[in-house]
Image 1 (spheres, rainbow, N blue to C red):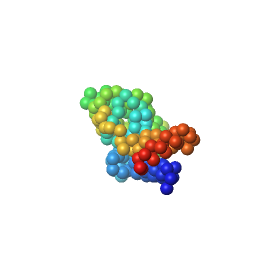
Image 2 (cartoon, rainbow, N blue to C red):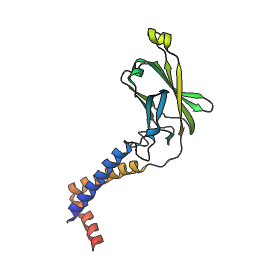
Image 3 (cartoon, helix red, strand yellow):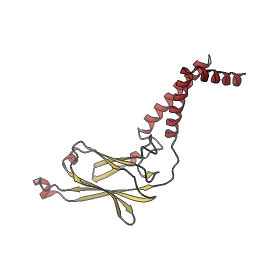
Length: 204
């Protein structure tokens, strides 16, 4: 096996590891806690929640622990019951225990069944926070006006827990770094000679 074939095999191996790790991370694997991210609005009726900090941790999903503060944070909510798409839903995030509001989205209907809340600067400091989801009766709907009631549920999370960059994030960075070196190796004769010479010395 020549040096070019060896480098190509290493590149393809790293590529397969990268994609398998990405699929694992988005499938509820150990290391993520998204399977626990559910709001029980009513018995057997749920909203699923996932948090992202794409600038600091581009390959990760979070739930009960957000490692970063003062970094763009996305809170994504998916309705698991069609009926909530026709109901007014209000979202709020508060800093605890003082109850200080850091984000608020007034009540609205979300017909697509998914809500993406963007906090451009994330949460301001380490500590405990609460996400509040409130169902608000629609006064324009006769049925909700007469039978509906305001219902508030919440879930806590901790921010700024100081988690290191995850294995998935490190693998992502390693993949792109190696990909760049591989392209350089194939396209630049001088760099190829240096790499071939170094590998030749190691093998001898």
